[in-house]
Length: 275
Image (cartoon, one colour):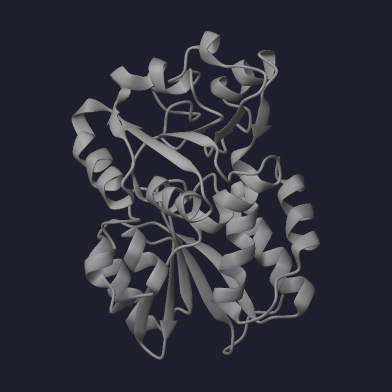
């Protein structure tokens, strides 16, 4: 693309800015449609000042991921209906200097799951209760999934809050064995298993709890096949990779960023080339 005085910047706020696949996906889509946008990483040292920078520099939008999905909210002007309900943000759009927070995590996660299984009436164990987990939980609840939310004991208040919001069971990981043994779907939303961290190569779920009739999803994208998904594959489970959620999030975000229908095939091809 040719950068000029009319080029609109879209940024990315998050700890995974070095490894994100979003740059390739969005820039390929924008180039394919001839849109004068550029998607770039932002290194955030002070979140409040970073948000103010969006406003004052006229940055068109920003994607938001861990650890800012919830902490960014006080610095925004408003939330859309879904983000307000979920209490977490995955995208910020600059509308004439007014910063509006939205979320596509739930839509993306649900779409990725529905590529493999119907969620209506299924027993779903959700591991984690952060911003992405909240968004996925609300979408699954609306789609008729029967959730149980589990989180580590040190952050049990987050599981309690989400469980009470949805009227579903919640607890810490001491309930993992009993909950997973009855589950149809297991969704892992914590950083456990993420590459280049102390949690790399680890899994919260003992392999022996996994059954061939289960669908197992891990939203970690690096590595693509986490230890949990390796174990699930060996046990004959249906796998849902984090990059499928990432793709569908990107599709939904693209429309928010640009107001233009996204070229899904182009985005899918760009994601495949980043593996």
